[in-house]
Every structure is written in structure tokens, then in C-alpha cells.
Image (cartoon, rainbow, N blue to C red; front, top):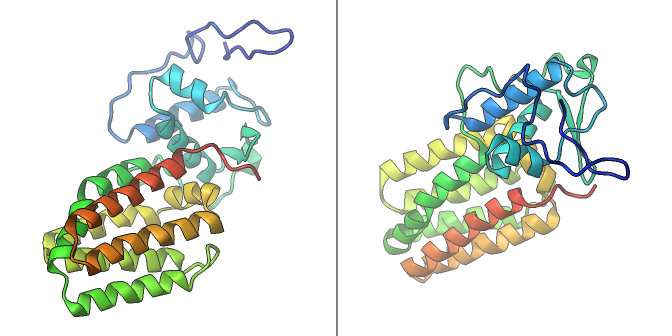
Length: 259
């Protein structure tokens, strides 16, 4: 039993189940939730519930039926796209791919030997830590460390959204900020939180929403953080870093880009 779609000759959606009683949804715990959601959608596809070329239910409906957040569903769909199970078409929806179209070299996200947190989990965790890191940097940064931050900032400014070095320069800025906090444990924590950003799921999600306008806005946000550190203003540095990470989450949670 599929989700009922509204249309000219269709009844409004009333069925609260995502799939037929022959294949009930299993209980889901909170550990790496998006991976479990992607596995369930895979089972639906493999069972023929959704056929090649067919569009999956809207992100909002999937979230309601699975009782999870839309960001969790979005991460699951990105994982499926990475594995070649679906194609995300900006402004059109998410479509099931034929098994023959699955790339033989695609990375299996669900069966990864080293499970990684999802992009939204990472951003949430960073927002718990990095604002205070920026505040400490505003208190403790030496002249040399401020020069290193300024160099990282300069690299970002000279870089375009399409430059493959963009992620490296962004990472250098945040690592330099953590080093300037004067706390080695915090530096190690920030380095660990950045590792998932180099994974294919995070990169693919960013690809759907990143463009030159977004990059330039991000540069301005980094500049605000740097200026607060230069002024030795911990409160402003904390606020600027929190605003930057909040905006990053909002960008990832916005509607799929219209291509």
C-alpha cells in the first residue's frame, strides 16, 4: 500500500502508514537515525513498493510517517543518492533509479565499517562547542595566532565557491581558531568534528545548496568572527560563531535548490 497522492482523481491523504502491513516499519532508535531511515527506504525499493523511475513521497510526508525530523530524512535521501539508489532533482523531487544504474564503485553508506554522524548532527555538536572556542580565542589569541587566522581568512576571500580548495581553507580557519583558544583538548575536539565533513554524504548535501552567493555570505560570517577576536571581544566572537553555524544549518534545511 503506497502513500495516497492528492490530485484530480485522488482522495486526500488519510492513511497514516508508510507501507503495507505485510512489511511493517520496525522500531527505530536514535543511533545514527538517518542510516536506519535510508535502510528502510532501501527495503521499500527492493520490495517493489517504489519502482524505478517513480518519485518518492515528499520529504515532509516521509518525515511525518516515520516520525522523524525533515533534516533526518534529508540525510537519508542524500545517503541513498550517494549509493546510487535514488536521484535528487532540484525542484522536482527524489526519483528511484533502476538497479542497473547503481554505480559499481558507489560507497555504501549504511554498511560503512566506521559509522559517521550525519551533517546535521555534526553542525549541532559544533554549535555546542565552537562559539565558546571563539570566545576563548578572543581572550587568549597571540599576535602570531591572529596572523594565522588572518591568513586563513585571506585564502577564503581569494577562493571561489567552485574552487576545490574551499573546504581546506575553511577548515584551516576553524582549526586556527581552536588553536588560538589555548586549549589543546578543544583543538582535538574540533578536528574530530571536522572529519565527517570530508565524507561523501556531507559533501553531496553541501553540493545541493552551495553556490557563490552562499560562499560569499559564509566569508562575511567568518570575517565577523575574526574581527571580534582581533578586538578581544569574547561575547561578540561567541555570537558571531553561533550565528555562522546556525546559518549553515538553515542553508542545509532550506528547500532543494531549483536547478
